[in-house]
Length: 345
Image 1 (cartoon, one colour):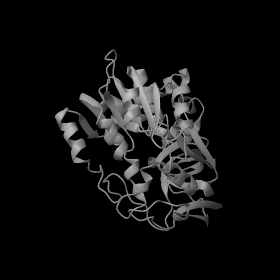
Image 2: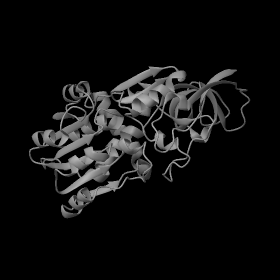
Image 3: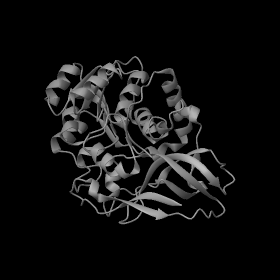
Image 4: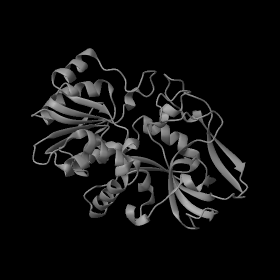
């Protein structure tokens, strides 16, 4: 059978901005001759995420991330359906997902790399397994639970950067559900600010491209900041941390503003910001969701219940066609998405 796949055509360079030309679409012949333990799957949805920028470099900079290789098929989060199986765990028609799904329209994969999922867990929205009821949702939920120290009734204020993105849009809603009295989002457009306030229940939103972040935070967080869910790093995070209260907590989830630069992860902070962290006893610890997978099942059930009840609203930006996955990735890196960036195959 003829299938399409996407390979890494070139690297943007450790200090470069990725472009669609870094990706190449190919057509190959796939012989569906399965070995024991293998499964033929048809791809339904693929995920593009900020961490993939690190995989485009020769050295990803993270021990848990392998670098993509030139001219080889790329991979990431994916969901699809089993067409043929020689694995006892799966039968034809099963909906399955994987962290390492090949960027192919159809593929032969080892059964032990797949996880069967119940569509009802995602309220029938299969793409949600790549976001709200997948690793993205778990990152938001467990990041807040493990590092945020949110306490119901404590009148806490949470700030979320990258608040209109896949993780940030969920983190703000979870912070509110877990008991924060005020949740403020930072994002890159007036449209996103409106979405955060009107659709997702944020108390306030700041457009960092058009507004003075420090000034707007003082207005939006009159009692200071207790919890900061950090997706972006850089000057925005310096501005937030400068207004954090004593014994506050930074959930260090991502640093997307720094991913196109050749800096270590997490990137170093300015001396002034480091001094604030120390003098105010603010915790700032890197959060890696893969270290908390023992809590994944319970977390996914809780996320599922919130989605079904309408307590959490899921936002997606969907692009159709595997040939457009490179463009979707580059758009996401530049803030072109609201919610989770999904590619529908």
